Image (cartoon, rainbow, N blue to C red; front, side, top):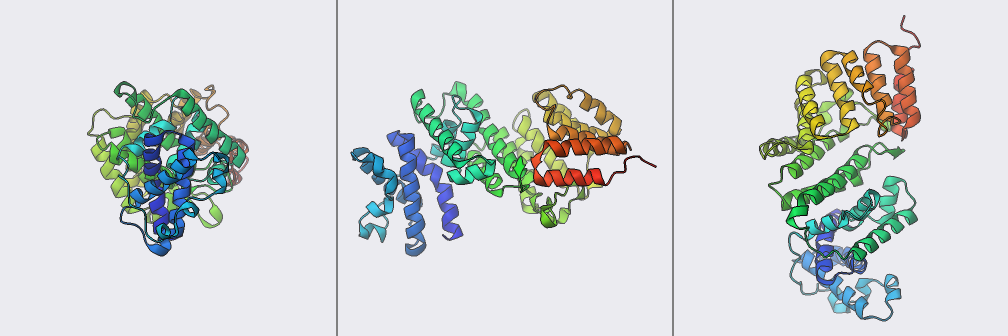
Length: 414
């Protein structure tokens, strides 16, 4: 399938699914109908051309498929059929007349629905990637290294939970919208982070996840252009993803930020991210995503690692810690503090999170401690910390990098 058609179908999928769910309910049946409409399009459009109204075409085909299904006594056989096989031959040559396109907020409503508070975070992630992100069940399973059957069951149960909740296809009431939007943004943030640095497996990055998260966040920003945190999250993703080409070397070796070839950074994304965060910071008091984006912008604006404005980053991390009870923020703050006031200052800050159960066994804590100990000249302790971090991580590129760092340090400094 041509890349243009594939990308168009991915962009249209949440709008089409949202339109059907709004009209008919039946989340699971609607998704089946949309998937079959997408399959029909992927076969017909490359040969016959993209219709004038792609979304209307997809809605029409999916609606007919769904109507057939709802009327049919043989619904159990629906997964054995394909939408395009049901259409008359002349309709496979000429696209059906387009129905009224989906309302612009259908995709946003669908996101809110997939992030329903009655769902567990893993279910929110899986359902969002499937229904809104357009990933297949096997792609989601591969990304999170979970059996495909587990992901399929998770998605099925999520749909059943939403149906049982009696939630209609509407945006949450105004009183709940801010809290629910925060859940949506957190899910997109988690998807992006897993794509940017995979928690396990042989690859450092999973671009299908990070790219999908950026695309979905762009959609939310388009629908909510005045929301500073939405803009901040998009800016953070763009500024972070801009470094992707320089993050790995030959053989997939991890390259840390300080050693990256900054000429390989995506300057177009950096420019867009900086413009976004600059505008977002003027939209009321900064929230966590805007502050993280501001930190990423400071890194992006430095032409070399040595030119990084670390004092400004320390100030931003202090602001972020006041808003976010997150030990990962403290780890990053410790690194920044060490760059300004020396490694001992960073190590003292780490002492405060050693007993935090959320991070006590996390490889990042040991890795940061190793880095600061190396800065302090404590090579033996640093080497042990790096090796402890390597034992804790399930990411093969990170394991290799940490073992390499440990191997470069002597047991005792002469």
